[in-house]
Length: 526
Image 1 (cartoon, rainbow, N blue to C red):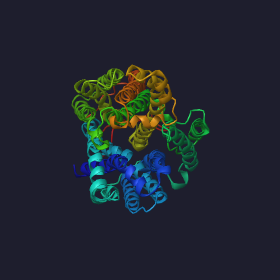
Image 2: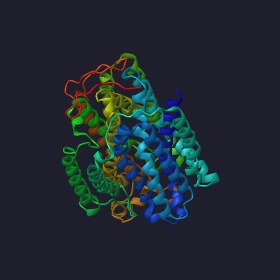
Image 3: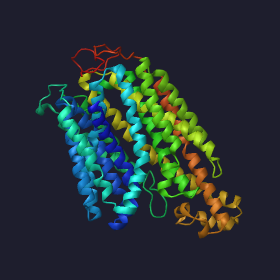
Image 4: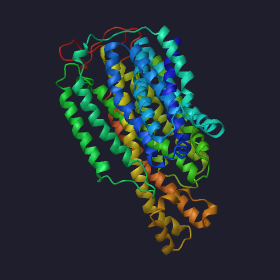
């Protein structure tokens, strides 16, 4: 339980940082005179933390969880301390890159440690706590970020990581035993695969980040531009080369044999789709409250509390039910149905939607996301060899993060297109003359209208803008509907492999081992 507490602290460390920094970022870039590099503070962290996830997972299988997790925490704390000391935007970007290099270890290795410590039947109960940690950090992040930014200094949003990380580091170093899963030698490590993987993921993430970054006039880059489409094509081509390299590597960082098991592949696909639906909701609902309901940036985060209640409650309850019954398939099927229904109802959102109705819809979306946060990790760890648990868990984490990036790019594109398309009609409906409405809609500064207030223009213009913003937000939730349908189809291919109470080998029906070894076993070695 002491180790579990330290692992939860590590997870809290990583998830809290993302929400705290987001709240304080406008003040940070203003103080450091870096508005033109605003996006890079987030993008560089996303790049380094995502690229390193599979690498940490593979290394933890070979050299043990303890040293790799400690390296990750130390790098994260060094990056946090240096970020707090930043005196320029360039320094902050470099130090955030270091922070991301450490963050890549926090989620996959922490989840793998739970797999090491508990039997398959027990894991669900504890994996469910991870969803709760994510939800709690989402609630506390804006509060902590806003408090330090407004009353102390934004530098302290990075320093707050230090006591939490040092405590977790102390417990891990003194209590956690190191268990090695393999006998890979340093010279056998997949250096070529690592290099090609990095070369492929960097342009892929940059293209997605560029697509989701709004320009000063409120527009987004087109998919056909080199900064988006060109980078995406380069990334996809290099990742195709990565698959070729991995198929021939002696010790691949991502063994392709894992994907031969349909349960593993279906879980990865469903996780990707759920993440696409989840991140678009989490990002755009606070914006809806800020623009349409007129609340502050900090307050808007708390207005989404039903979504977090569903996420936290769904994750914890699903984890306990999985541990109690030893079965999971009906839970993840039900959760994808909740996601489809919840996002489907969100497509009816308007500027005047009753708060209670909106809360109910958000609760359903949360219930569609929460069970998967504990369920898919338990499923994946249940169908792979203990030797590959870190690799499998990191693959799940990687695709979850990629789903978030894809979801944000798609949501940003659809929202902007719909807002531009709907604005003239909504302005006319609100009583604005057609010629004036067309002029507003065609203005290069159209994007700034999303922040218009009653004191800044006629009431009917404000009403039209708010109605257009709400309608565009509603249309954006069709992404969640489509991703929910795909996730639902994917989970139908998940096999019900009973979770055992003891750690004993169990062959898989369609194998998830490596060439030349016995069929993959299910279980964990404490």
